[in-house]
Each structure stands twice: as C-alpha cells, then as structure tokens.
Length: 460
Image 1: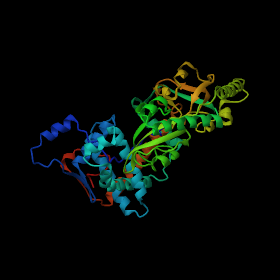
Image 2 (image 1 turned 90 degrees about the vertical axis):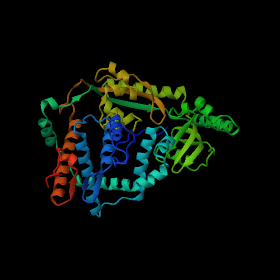
Image 3 (image 1 turned 180 degrees about the horizontal axis):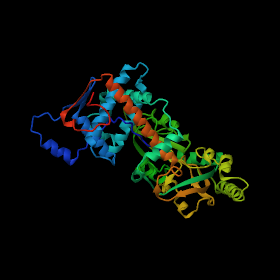
Image 4 (image 1 turned 180 degrees about the vertical axis):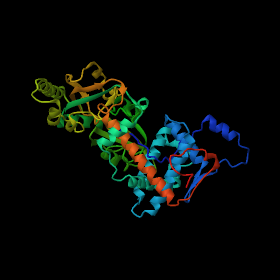
C-alpha cells in the first residue's frame, strides 16, 4: 500500500546518523577532561567548517558503504568547502530563492528516512532527546542553505550536454585496466492484459469491508481482523498498522481520510485504486500520524481472468506468426502504461535504464526468464500490477548479456552517464577555481595542509 520510492540523497548531507565507530570512541577517550574536542578546521568566506562536520560526513560515507575511502578526510573537507562556496554564491544571486514549502518538503523527506532507519519516531526522539518538531525548527536554516546550494549547482551546470563524440572520447581515455566490469544483465519486455472489475465484484468487496468495520465498532480487535482479512501485504502482518505516516506517501484518497480523523476515530469505508478501506487513527503527532487500516481488494471472476489469458494467447500467436512485432503489439494492446510505448521494455527505477542485473529479476517475478533465450516469448502468466490489479502477461526476453568489460556497443547509456558526470565535474572544478581567483577568503587548518585537493584551495 505504501508507495515504494528510492530516496536519492543530494550531494550535501546535513542529517547524520549519530552512531560512533570504535575509532571515534577511542579518539574521544584520549581527550583530557575539559578539553574542547570540536574546532574550526576550515573557513570559506564567512562560512566555517567544524571538525565535527568532517567526522559526521565520514560516518555518512561509512553508513552508505562508499567503496573508495582512501584519503577520505581530504575528500570530505574539500566537499564541505565546495558546498560553502556554493552557498556564498547562492546568497549573492537574487534569482535563487527557496520557499518555506520547499524547506518543509525537503526536511520531511530526510527526517522520514532517518525515522525509518531508527525503526520508529519514538526511537529517533529518544536518541536525540527532542521531538521531531523541535529538531525541525533547529535544522530549518540548514535545510534552506542546502536547497540554495543545490540551486546554485544547477545554475553552474545549466545547459550542459554531452555528444556521442564526447562519450567516445571519454571511453577511449579510460585506461584498459580501469574499464569497469558489468554483471550479466537482461532486458525484458511485457504485454499485460488486466481484468476489469464488474460493479458486482466491487460491491462484494465493499460489503465485506463494511462488515469488518461493523465488527470493529462492536468491539472486535481490529489488529486481529487485519491479520486475517486485510489485502495490504505491507501492513496486514502488523495488524494493519503504519507508524509515522506523512502526506505524500499514500494514495490521495487515503490521505484525505487519514489526516482528517481524530485520535481513536474510525473512518467510514472508502475506495482507492487498491480497493476498499477503513482506517482507525491511533495517534497524531505534528505532521505525522500512526494508523491502522484494513484493505479489501475486489476479486475478479475466473471468467474475466480467462478472457485476459485468451486475449494474450491470441496476441502471442500473432507475434510468433510475424503478423505484428512485439513492440507494436505492446503499444496497441498492453494495459501497462509505463512500458507500452517503450516497446514493452520494463525500466529499472534504480538506473533509469532497461537493463536489469540477473539477481534483480526476482523483484519482477521474472526469475524464469533465465531459462529463456533472447527472442523467446513466454506463455501467458498470471500477473499482479503494482496497484493490485490482476490479469495476465506475456514476456519476451529481449536480450541477455554475459559478464563483461563495459563497451560502447552494449553499455552506451551507462558510459554516457559516467561521461556526463565527468564533464560536470570539470565544469564545477573550473567554476571553483574561477571563484577562488576572484578573491574568496579560504583558511584551512594545518592538519589538512598535506591534502592533495582537486582544486586550488591552498595556492591562491
């Protein structure tokens, strides 16, 4: 039920999980009592960077399991100086503005991630010794600075593109022993036919939901009923409960009901794209709510499911007779809007590409394609869409690659992305050094003077 989304962190990380490595603990234990353990380690313009800022960023890299940690202290302090320079320039630029709504949205996205990391809002608040709302008020200025710096970076890179010739030159510049390896991958296309619910089928589900709501009103345990009957796999095993829900995570119809209930109140039965629900609000805390719900998904008849299978069976035969291509059939017949105009190819949300590592295919219930050859088309298989609709699909294995060194023919999109990032970094470095030549004040603590920075922080 809860929308799945991948949180992509911006290049500036302001919220750091407050966990400590053994090395940190040993370092702190060695500090005599009464001695100040934090200090200014760099200044850019009027912006300071503390030793604790560096330590926190290193921890973030460790938590994210960043592979290259060589000279990490030097890399971190240079990143922080770059971010301060972006902020200085953003504050001078009258075209860069950040609204209160933008600050709220960014904070909510980040705090939600960290609450999930702690396991609950209560655990987060216990660790910090303050409420989420208090934490938000303290961090608002930092979030605003973050968004301003992001806008400045976007402005520096505005209009930057990369040509096929740029991609080729970049690839040819990579030393042979540094060309990255690529895992075995597949491209898979699908055509889906989803069963259409009849009014009668929807009414049966609604009546079942009304019956369960009435049982709760009369005193039965809603959590137990959710375990037994709810069709939401994300919450049924937890008695229908979701904690720390914020706006933007659920279907709009669901949120409209949830955020208008009082503590302990039970909603009427209502409908979303997933089926019929009712909600009990457990507790509201600021902009977050804890709730319990039961979802009853309307069941399509065996007859309607069979019609879907028969349609796909006919489409499959037409494709195999070369009467129509798989790509054209997807555009003409498929019910999957996300893939039908892309030749039926299923896009990997993590990369934005249509290639999937072999170990990711289980996420799509497509592990069976390992027994197919490129060009093979499966028989119709039962399929449930992300919005809980049921039907059938046929699948074509478009191609499969073996593990190999990246090359322009097979991995152009991946290399193009890397080449663009390389070009962006050069533009950013040129911008940094131009600003430094213009006279931005920079001071770096003596403990970092041995660092080999990418840019001229120490020589101007």
